[in-house]
Length: 324
Length: 64
Image 1 (cartoon, rainbow over the protein chains, first blue to last red):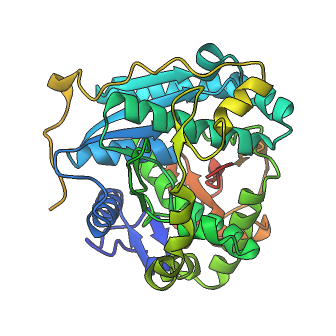
Image 2 (cartoon, rainbow over the protein chains, first blue to last red):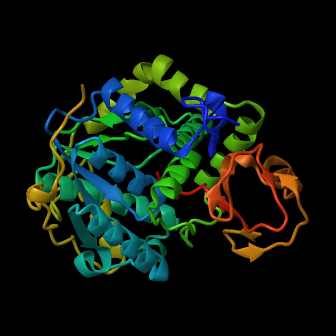
Image 3 (spheres, rainbow over the protein chains, first blue to last red):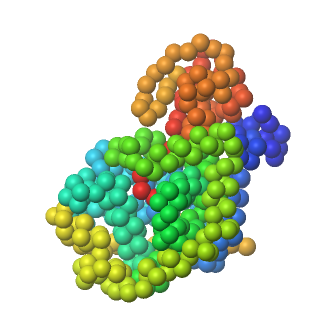
């Protein structure tokens, strides 16, 4: 197979594009796709500061690498979740990447800062581990971004993630979740603006990007995620994709183009009645926010504010650049 | 060759095309990368014998 762009031997094939790429052209392809997603959805304001949610996995490290190369002022935020060796390994990779790129990494440690870890939180709240983890991550990313004054939080959700979440939401016809399944969630009222610049790349592409770029990401799956629904949806979609390349992209982008606006109002009503949580100050519609409830059940406490700020290490940062 | 998640070793005779190898292992090509002697290869590439092959899963994620 030849590279679609330069006709040199290809090292990566992307069946939904019916194309192969050499290493150099593949890196450019990934950057182009991220740049297009940012531009199409007005994700990042010109000169804006970005806090990248970094797990040490392929998606978040690829995203951070690409944003830095595109010239964005992007810091990383790593959350230590207390999942044994897995957290140790993922944290080590996030720190190594930050050091290599001379980028700023903000760290929040759930056990140290909130008094519980994900395994304990899941047990105490009788939640699935991925549910407790997702709740904690959303809360802590948002809090760190708001406290640090960042313009946006960028997450490494890729096309496979979004298609799998969409499949789950459609199977349940969960209109509120469908209403907020967008590449950009606006900020305001205590919420940071959240963006997903990897929606035009599949996870096979982000993994290949890391291999080509020499990014040492954690390959092993989180030991607590085995058997979760999200992975099951991905496997089902990949079986469809193998027979019909492009099916995942058609499913997700068809939703964005033709359905998302129709259900947007379902999510809007959820923001009515928001007020600050008495425990941590984060917006909630309940008496106490879900994270503080989880922390209380797990024997923890509201988190100590993260020492996050968009400034610092400015002399090492790449030139500020926005879309266009 | 090395298969990841869980990590295990499998011996298989070559030469063989990457896609044929994945079919024989009943692995969906959308869910893995294949590396031969440390380098990424496309599905139509032929794997020589001997070669060190890694089949690396790319599916990840709990909550989203």
